[in-house]
Image (tube, rainbow, N blue to C red; front, side):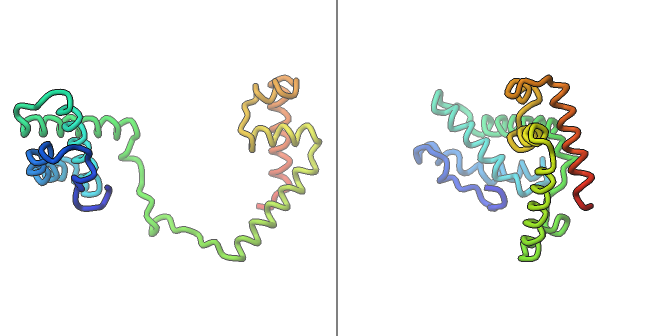
Length: 177
């Protein structure tokens, strides 16, 4: 829905009589959200949230004053959005536009270099003692916690931490910068 420019009311499941008395308010809701957010990219999503809430509510009980209910719901949707944005700290997030964060092309040269780096890393890992290598792989590639690794191989958590630190130090020394 983002960036579509228009809310597609056909995507909201309901019968046509329910939509007939709601659809005249869509443009008013869009203007309301543009004024409140200043962000055209999210307006249709917010309008859809309002419509979804209203139609879900109408399935339970009829709404007497649809216009008042729509705009009260719109205010609640805005309040929920502000809460979510505050928790997510949206104002500190940056957009991922290609101009600001260009995508590196996956050229044949880059593929060859990456394969060489992987081979080199495999060789470096082979230099480690088998237990240290296994512990490192369980942590980094299997995503196991220190406690899970400890339970699997019967070594103390402290011992696991020391082995991982040794493996990381070895890799850091041997990998080119």
